[in-house]
Image (tube, rainbow, N blue to C red; front, side):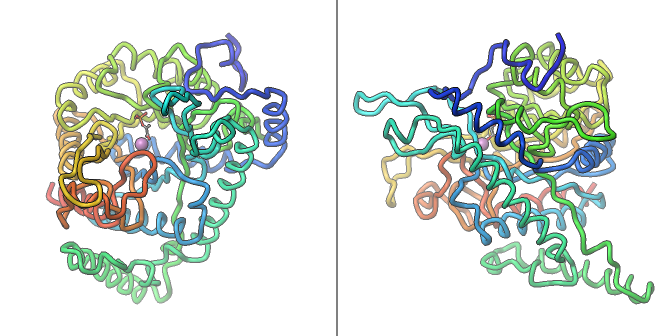
Length: 452
Ligand code: PEP
Ligand code: CO
């Protein structure tokens, strides 16, 4: 079948909003289709080659951000806080792994969410489920829940605003090691980890000054780092509107983001989302779960990249700490024995979600979705170990985190308990690591890498 940005339309396609006014949808898509792209093919190709390096063990991928971005969080402090935590984690990882780090944000487009049911029932009233800020609105009214195509345009604009600010911060020296204020720990200052972190930053600063004394000038390359963007490839008409040919390069590029990924609920190799991925030149992520079979996985990889291009297929394993030991090894072996050059990433978040019922505090007696830090860490550690035993490479981690002081995941150096969850739980979707927990995870990964 010939591929076009809309050739998926004849295939089974789940998780799509139902727009009552198709003509309005097409008008908005045409408008988005005429606007400039959000990223360029040059950046996409650069990321793909970095991913290929990571798959060979020459780099490490740090991939993180919110489960879902909100339109309301498209603000200067929220964007800067997200960059800062990714930057600080990557510094810690460089120090521990002695590898270059590629930073990928779940941002500038991570608005749409898959849902377990297409509708939601409250007091006998049934309405479409809330699917994210670029699809509909969370209030439980028919008007709010009816998918509105204009929100796709609002999402495109916020993605552009976010990217614009990120690019300006990075170009303006936000990541410059000569600016210690950007490396400050803010409210994590009193954390048990702060001393170790500060020692690391000081040591890196020392080395930098030493090198500069030798070189007789400032080391300019230290001022620039790259941030790549990613989001779940979900609302296909939107993605198709930003999928284009570019001058002087072969093929089609999805210019809505550098690295789109296919979630677990849409990863059927015979269905629309995988078909869409087949025709774009971007690297594409595919979530791999505890029920993914080796046959299904091989079919997906071969569909997306029949030419077995290095860096193109990124497998994001999210099995859960209790299941990874059983599920991951047969998948690693199948892909290794088929000699398919994939990039293996561990997502220690989505297989470790659980519901708890706090016994005291504001949320006593209520069910709350959370994740335990110990389970997250255990899944990462097992992933390293399993890859070592199979002779494959763990190229990176994919985490849900925020640069803020939320209480959504329990455990970590400060020992958050179920009863702490009510204090600052802000996620409308999955529970995220807070600033301190995210940094701690990076330090533990780095420590493990350094000890090897
Ligand atoms: C996610 O990454 O937020 C997500 C929904 O993941 P998964 O498809 O792995 O459940
Ligand atoms: Co999530």
